[in-house]
Amino acid sequence: MSSREAEGPAPKLVLIGGGHAHLHVLLSLATERWPPLDVTLLAPEPTQLYTGMVPGYLYGRYRLEELAIDLEALCGAAGAVFRQERANVVDGDARLVETAEGPIPFEVASLDVGSVPRGADLPGVRDHAASLRPLAAVVDLRDRLDRLAGTHEGRSVRVVVVGGGAGGIEVCLAVNRRLEQRGARGELVIVDGSDAILPGFPARARQKAGRAVTGVGGRWRLGSDVLEVEPRVVQLASGEQIACDLPIWVTGAAPHCLLSKSSLPLSPDGFFEVDQTLRSSDGSPVWGAGDCVDLQARRLPKAGVFAVRQGPVLAYNLRAALSGHQPRPYHPQTNFLSLLDTADGRAILRRGSLVLHNRLAMRIKERIDRRFVRRLQRIGSSAEGLRHPTPPRDDP
Image (tube, rainbow, N blue to C red):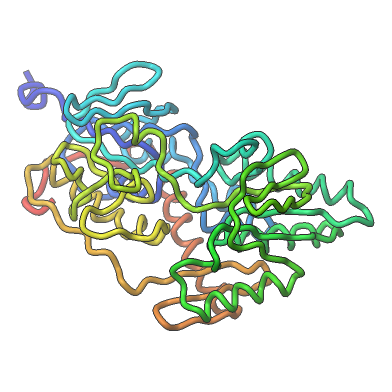
């Protein structure tokens, strides 16, 4: 009998979702020392798009392959098994993930399933509004813009973007640029139920974003929620009806349906509640990161910059749990960098009180985005068997 057989089967680590933090876990598995283990990644799609580059894809700055991350290839480099499945229930007490194909047992599990757009269950939204998830929806949105540009010669293409946060503003400006490239004119409206755009941003950043939208002829409808989306009309709670050829839903984050179906502790807002080590606040062997979680001690904005920073801590703590070592606390950054692509060769940069809108900011954004994606693509395209599991070190 080999020493491996004498020790018994390798412990099972199940990663649920292909979000930014889990990409870092796979990167760590491929390039760093972990104990022997059986790793499975569950995700509904084999390809993940880097969300920071999606607006650039919409207006043609990037080709699809430049922002696409092959989860299956990355799993191969990490020594993990990729399963194109959705998790239906996560049971931390029984240590099981329920899927349509049957239960998957685990010693340790981690969630990074992101969020869903707030209000996506309103009447007509799923039937008539475009979205940015999954990959096929992004490709379809750009194709729809091109078709509308081709059929509206001499007429404006009326677009309503629902959501006045960073994503909605970037999408609005990207859509306008795409229509211009195709020789069409956009009539753009951004709708949001709040009274101000870019919640959490300083006034100067909101002013610059507002000028960027109005500078291309865009308009705002603030302070009134959407009630319903019809084929060519967006109905507001105020009673106003906005005619449109294309509604696009880019609202803030709501909890993924997996969370309410699972036996996991939830925050008051319905997100998976984790402690300072990113472990379930009830102590069950389930960790989490990204938009699907709320920290028990502090609520954070739903922004990709936090998921990226959580990735190394999550990887460390998953490895620590499997190795019997002490976890490391996650300390959220208080002065983080935000970059908004304004689709004109410039970006709005915000860090603390510093706010800029220029080409240098776009160069910074592009360098950060491309470096992140290229590293993952490079690891994913490496030879199979890159990962060689070895016994854990004293410091995981």
